[in-house]
Image (cartoon, rainbow, N blue to C red; front, side, top):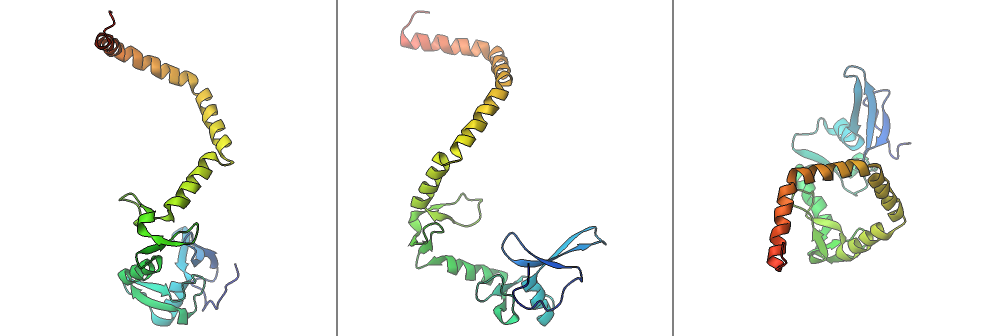
Length: 191
């Protein structure tokens, strides 16, 4: 990947720029002293070249929201909480949120809430778009492949499942017979 902006030097002569999974350019190089790879986000590297080490509890924010624009004039130091607030304000405006699928700004009640342990409060897609996406997943082109895989698994494990069922029945035979007898008595059928 060719740098979009000046690199201000390298943290290591062999370092190369790669994209992180979050979309940030970062330096990447092999460190023989730890026998592993080292990584350093380019925007943090640039900030540290101009202002020294990043203070604890602070983040470097891209003022124009372009993660690949790591010019020093585009970088600003903010507290971690302040950085989260900045990005939260970008996601919500006047009690509305932008759907990532249709791109419309809709009231929050048109988005499903995430489970408590998940990151973020609302899903990224409005209820209508999520329903459409779920239907496409269920009935889409990969449906046959999923069903085929299920059938192949069932066929390959048929004997194993039968053995498991026979074992369970042998262990619980008396309970099953008692339940059947009780059911016949409530229906009024003689045993």
